[in-house]
Length: 191
Image 1: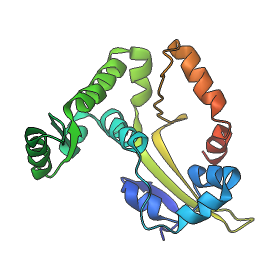
Image 2 (image 1 turned 45 degrees about the vertical axis):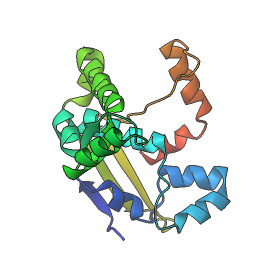
Image 3 (image 1 turned 180 degrees about the vertical axis):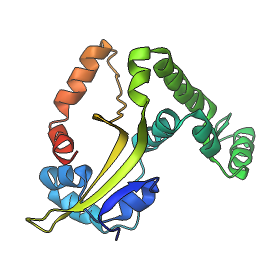
Image 4 (image 1 turned 90 degrees about the horizontal axis):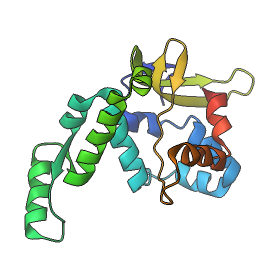
């Protein structure tokens, strides 16, 4: 169990292992308490493609291309082919996590698009990435936690990705995603 405090460079796995309540836990408690209690005591978090992609995007955008490239290596080919398996194993042998080449390039492309838009790029300047905070509520004694994607002097940035399978104009897709995420105000309350 982590002590109450502010943590810089706390490993993501260590953050998630701590049993303090975070925004995801609160959403689960409100939306489906049975899932919360079941998941709380499992050894490992369920990994999904969305979580993996989000972690990769965070690494590249929040920590930089160099840190991303130190953590991940690309490979070509499917794992159902000899060449693909060999490429995967070669990427893995570098001590990095293998990512399919097209996914690797997509993440780099997203990073480039952000860097080329001054109004977005400036959001990720003059701050610190991945700050974890653990605290105990004085009235209830309940332990809480939050992990700020990017903390600036006057703001907290919460980096999100979204899928847009219906190819809506982006401003509408974002609006719909936020509207569909009814418990988003919980994040605001914790942050």
